[in-house]
Length: 163
Length: 162
Image 1 (cartoon, chains in turn orange, green):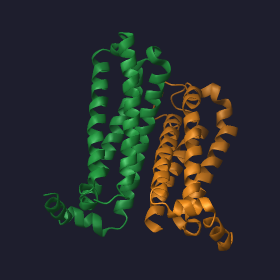
Image 2 (cartoon, helix red, strand yellow):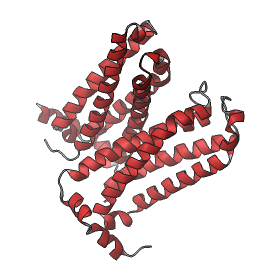
Image 3 (cartoon, helix red, strand yellow):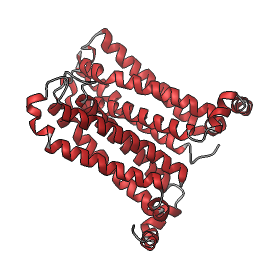
Image 4 (cartoon, chains in turn brown, cyan):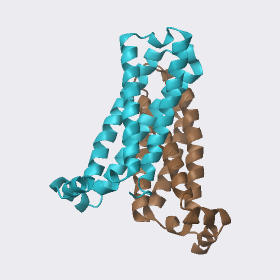
């Protein structure tokens, strides 16, 4: 665990102080965060549901990912930037908040799941892209991702009630 | 009047139940955000295709692909929203941003419904003339902006008192 002094130092960064002191910056950043995270979760869920064979069966998986994932990544960049901005304004509080730590762990696990999927089942996507029910590896990745992102939202909301 | 409604609502057994179980409000808010995820991503994908492809967009196909998600998401938003209002009536009903949000919801519902019905009646309705194509694009931008405003108003309810 990183020393509390470090997070105290982060809170003293001029930009962190600015966000903490301003009456409108935090809510504005939080609004951007909500817009970004709902786009991340919603677009990833579209891909997950396709991987599970539950929706959009008529669209090939690789076509769908090419269409949707740039949106997920763009939104993710905004979510991380806005998230970090909120974090630094109350770094000590968030750094030791269990729901926050669980949320970050879940995002890391979702990333790991995606990496495994891309190095695994997705390498042969051409062979199964148009099948309405993708192979087991893809379905497991889709289910894990869907569950992880739903929990990320729940934990994120819980942070607001425990800080 | 609003005061009276809030007090009456807050005294109902349903409201008491929501107030007494500490996880109901955060859980419902989480479900509310997940519902927004469904709606916002569907609306963004649909309107983006509309903007990018213009006359070349198969609007009936976009309607088929994305509008069901919008209805599902709106249903979720309505249900979870109702629970939040019953649980904390004064927080919502006495807040002008809540009413701004509701006004925007009515407008977006009317736009979405009209759009959906027009395509249902005639799949190529919006491709009929260049003018209709630009009208469709215009409403694509407007509805996206309204959704962003709805989310923003929703988030700010927590920060702005009555």
